Structures are given as C-alpha cells and as structure tokens.
Image (cartoon, protein in one colour):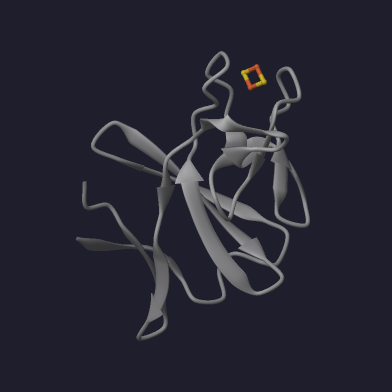
Length: 101
Ligand code: FES
C-alpha cells in the first residue's frame, strides 16, 4: 500500500524527512534527486537514522556512528546487519512509500 509522505520538492537533495505512521518511523532520503526510504530506528540502540549525517548514499547514526546504505538498508561493511527498506515513488507530484508487509 502506497502512502504519501511529502510533496515532490519538499525534501531537498542530501536531506531527509522522518514520517511516523501507526507507531512506525520511516526515514525518507533524497540522494542526488533519487528518493530512498529505510526504517528510521537504528538497530544498534534506537538512534534516529533520519537525523543522521548523509554522505552520498550512506547515513551515519549520530549516536555511535553505525553506517547504513539508504539504497539497500544494509550496514556499510556488514551486509548481515540491515534495516528495513521500502520502495519509493513519485506520483502526481507527491513522494510515496510502499508500506506493504
Ligand atoms: S544507536 Fe545507532 S549507532 Fe548506536
């Protein structure tokens, strides 16, 4: 199921918007004009990945500096650790994420 999380130009390149829906938090990133969405909650100790430092497609959690690829959800350098990743699309001027499953 697709839900709208932002207007198409609302999230600037290199920025993120955190969206809460039904007690889940989603971090929606704009990386050079492409949008990606991962679970906002860092699996290490619950830091907010959406408030992390984004460089290219890698976000660094500000709590203890774990890093995740926002395109895949995988921890940088350790593909066995990951956060959930969600499909993103632009539809009729809005950014939408697929929260199915
Ligand atoms: S909570 Fe994110 S690195 Fe520790």
